[in-house]
Image 1 (cartoon, rainbow, N blue to C red):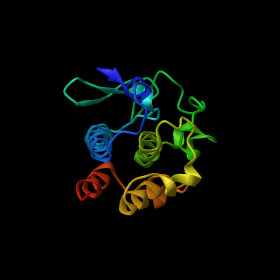
Image 2: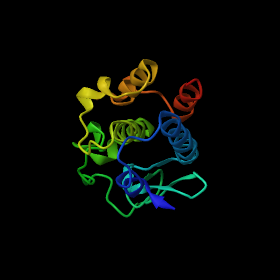
Image 3: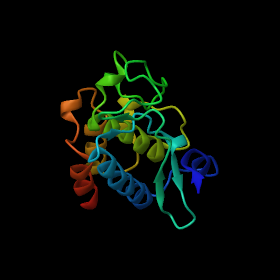
Image 4: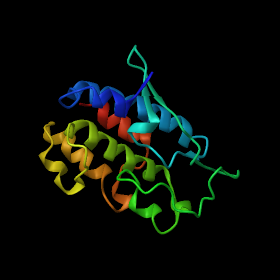
Length: 164
């Protein structure tokens, strides 16, 4: 497949809304599977998402993952890659990762897809992205700096996305 960042770079406008939702739903299924096995990705960004020719989304690069009961490649207490997709709770201590941390990064990914070709994430301006208001509200909840205000799980997020 092609990485999401490369796919977007080949476009002059944002992905159609229905394609954004399709990609997000597939990522929710992948995250639900990982989270159910005690794996937190901690590095969701356009460079870790692949899209096959058939439109199947693949979540890759688990090298920064926090895995319950196992050591990871990266010491969980060391700060991760500092990117626009990094949840705020991981800055003081990357071991603070939870499923809601991955959902924050998913919200950033959605904002990135919806606001393309703008390459700079402006989380405070997410209300201006050209998607339906109900979708903007859901995106806003994902982008909350308070993890408890984000959806509780990828499964619950998937249910909300299926309504759109």
